[in-house]
Length: 376
Ligand SMILES: Cc1ncc(COP(=O)(O)O)c(C=O)c1O
Image (tube, rainbow, N blue to C red; front, side, top):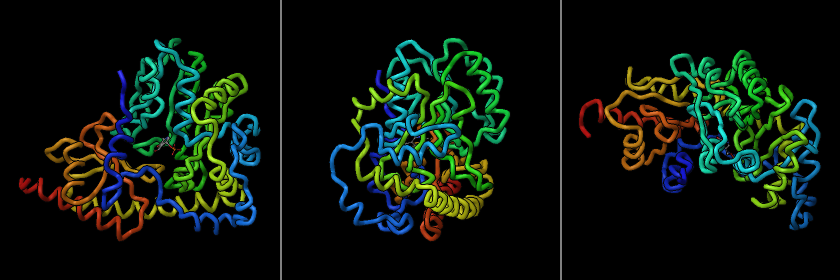
């Protein structure tokens, strides 16, 4: 049975028509001109790039910029992919066989677990507990990871909650992986989007031998349109992943790789993450004010990272009905919690220009007023 990608399906069927788009998972993207300015791209050099197939595993300079972000990694450990999406897909198709088990957090971005399900793999979940500030349930982790577990799939920082795994949680995950022999696949696209620190969330790479780290330019760098991601993997699986990548896409785009090389160079990368963090931090304050207008209706555990908040609501309708009503009557797009398997929630992205955000929040409050007054 095919399991559609709930979040992406919800988005792709609606995002082109929404007037107020709060369903995005990244910060407001850069324009091409902005990137060229910030990264001081040499336009003559870019103009002379031959639009041929590039190195299939990624341009060497790009791979070495990426490798420098991971302790002990070399360019030869990095495979450049079409977004983190392709990386997750290739990992699932390389490591998993029907009947295997994957353990994922819940709620989570469905990419790796969904690919696993579609490959006939049994996906077990370990909750992030909202009442405990989205802490990972360590007892459930202990019980769920067994010798049958092939992959422990992490999204750290997490989508949709913004939770960053604590030192204790990281240690428990590594201990569980060591005990069971499982791979840790760590999707780290939100590293660099922290709210309270300028220290980037550390990768799992280097903390245990069977780690594959996944990342992309889409979130912390504000460049989702480049469709440029990567994975970092140990030698014993790197070649096998590369073989799958040849089937999936052959390679990422030549121009995308050149622009990503500029964006991820050591002097440009911090400018892009600083921009993302600035947008994220101001946007969350505005969101908190907007959600406080009707006391008791909305609550949110402040996300520790990412542009999004997973907002809980107390209104007499399902998350899908609320999201559909917001879109139909106010042109406001959010992701219903049901796409993450959790009712009474929606995911709301606030790293957006202030007047736009305030306008959208007023619209959200108009819909809640309507339900509070019973006029719907
Ligand atoms: C956790 C996570 N991983 C991967 C992706 C896909 O990213 P990309 O644009 O790099 O394919 C997303 C996009 O929302 C995401 O939230």
